Structures are given as structure tokens and as C-alpha cells.
Image 1: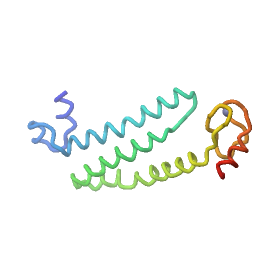
Image 2: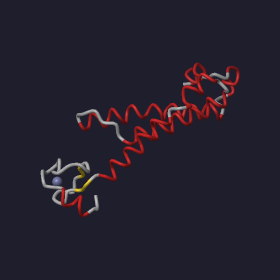
Image 3: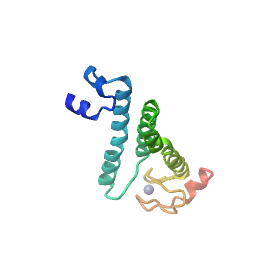
Image 4: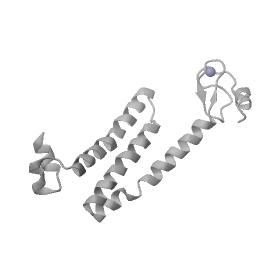
Length: 137
Ligand SMILES: [Zn+2]
């Protein structure tokens, strides 16, 4: 495994002494950022349709944030630019996801959640309009 860390290190001679705190931070950032692909893939396979779960956006935000910290530490403008604006679509997606979640209505028959615009429960077909009215939607 040492060969992997040696090959991936940017700091050169320091690699022989082990990973620095900054390199560990970068590896954690890479792993967190990389996990998002598996989370999205798993959610898609599970639902048999393309799905982007909210965890995908959190992993994107945290992973790229850690990488931005590392890039700033290295003072490499190309790396900094690569991560500087990523948070904008991630935060925006989290805000939109939160709004959608708050607008959902819960079916009184089967307790499944449906979009706030739904008139019928996607799971059992019961009307959900009355429940939306009860929730003040
Ligand atoms: Zn239902």
C-alpha cells in the first residue's frame, strides 16, 4: 500500500516519512467524494431508475470541501479553481431537495410519501388531497 501513497503524493521527499496531516485530509476528501458514486449507483440499482439521493450531495459537498482545503494548502491555483465553485450546485441541490421533502404528503392508508402535487398515493392509489389540506399545504 505504501507504493500507492508514494505514487500519489505531491510533496515528494516527505512521502518517505509517511503521510502528512494534509495528505491524510486529501485522501479522506477523495474517499468521501468517491463514495458518492457508489451511493448514487446503489440507490439507482435499488429503485431500478436513475436516482440521486440526498447523501450524494452531502458527500459531494464534504469531499470537495476537504479537497478545496488541501488545494488552498498547496497554493495551486488550478486545483483551487477545480473545487472553488463546486459547493454552489451542491448547496442548491440540497435546498431544492429540502423543499421537495417538506412539500411531500403522507398517505393515510399506507403511510407512503408522495410529491406535494400528487392527488393519489403512488404506492396504494388512495387520494392524498385531504391529507395535504390537513397539513396546511
Ligand atoms: Zn398509500
